[in-house]
Image 1 (cartoon, rainbow, N blue to C red):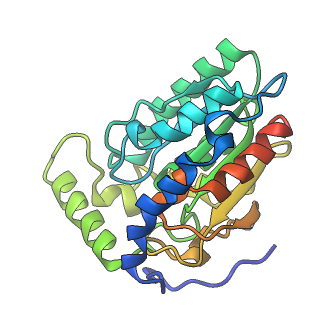
Image 2: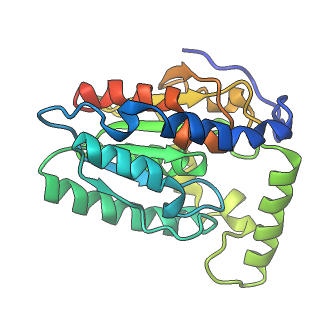
Length: 249
């Protein structure tokens, strides 16, 4: 499966104002009867949720409640603000993954939004025996810096603070140095045999370039969603329901 060539730092073509749709997307989800009373299968795989850049686990609370109503055991990532060194952040995610797999007695579905999808992908590459499926929601795995100028400015500001020694933040070394070299390699590696990958993207995403989300080793699913709204978009929930009904396979 081929993916389009991307220029470094290529920004999304969709206007940033499209991100104002979040409230409407959430409202449509909240009035949907199957959101409040979803079908509850006899068994549903455990799910680990990983938030996006500059977000924390609370940003995926709506999704987590829905998953639990469907019967899945869920776990948060332990991330308060997703702006730390990728390797250090991933270590915490992998610890949660091992715990959830042990408690549930099965392989886990990883769902990551934006940067969280990048973390989920690398966790799956490194732990194929613990992961059945990885779902990336608007995750620019092909070009993590192919984002809107305002977001790129935030990334550079955080990196400068990290360079100055501010704890809990990534630095420029995470982008091109040795500390996260292994992470970057795994981000572009083929998915292991037996691990399914699904990349959900939106051409109207105003935060990341949708082309950067087309992981060549994943199934591609398009939705009409804002970037931030993917965690509350009814179309995304239909995609997730289909994956979970297949047991995460």
